[in-house]
Image (tube, rainbow, N blue to C red; front, side, top):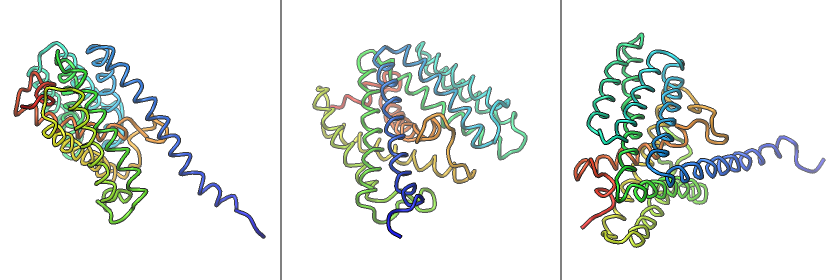
Amino acid sequence: MTGTSRHDQNTKTAPKKELAQRIGSAIVLATIAGLLTYAGPWPFTVMIATGSVILAWEWARTTRQKTLDASFYIHAVSAVTACVLAAMGEGWMALSILGVGAFTSIFASPTPLKSAWSAFGVLYLALPCLLLVLFRFDQTHGMAVIFFFYIVVWSADTAAYFTGRAFGGPKLAPRVSPGKTWSGFAGGLMVPTLLSAGFALWLGGTSVEILAISGAALAICSQLGDLAESAIKRNFQVKDAGQLLPGHGGLFDRVDGLIGAVLGAGVIAGFRDFLISGKSLLIWP
């Protein structure tokens, strides 16, 4: 008997279908993110605040196997309030709200371990949302810095995926994420570095070399964010944080790299000028 069995056909078709779903979801999400970023600081803030609530829900689902519990409401309210305060120029007050939210969530969970994960989730997921709003509200470089994030993170993710599949080789972190390779890591570092240099040339008024190095650093942070989410899911034996995005899982599965990159950018901005963070990240002597 010749020919290909139905099982073999399904085995070959499944990865292609998953890739098509990933690409389709990524295009839709990128289009929405790009349009709302371009629309202005407040539409962007609404998008980020909405995303912070979804992330709070997925964090509860992943780490506590519950969704609408007290810790979720504390997390969600803290995140949205911090985003609004950041949009109003109250950056330090927004940070204080997250601190209060993280502390309060400790007392809302039934066990010390769940309390620790709840508090960590408030800071780990809501702080990047706050930072994104602060970056976007930079009057001179707000939109540019957000698109810089998109370029670095999306190119790092895409390049790592395709170079890893093309070249394979030694595993990057087999116990955390068996599919990731060192070749993928290299591709996910090289492409964003080159694109960051090109972005610096387009932007003007900044050091091409330093911005390229900054882009490389953020690309590394992005890949570390991806690994961190994989480690969290593996710890709780969860495949996906949610089912919001076909081919990707939940929103956390899609923005894990962005979370890592924004936290890294926050460190850079903190050492320069936290309250005019767009300029502090993009403009170098």
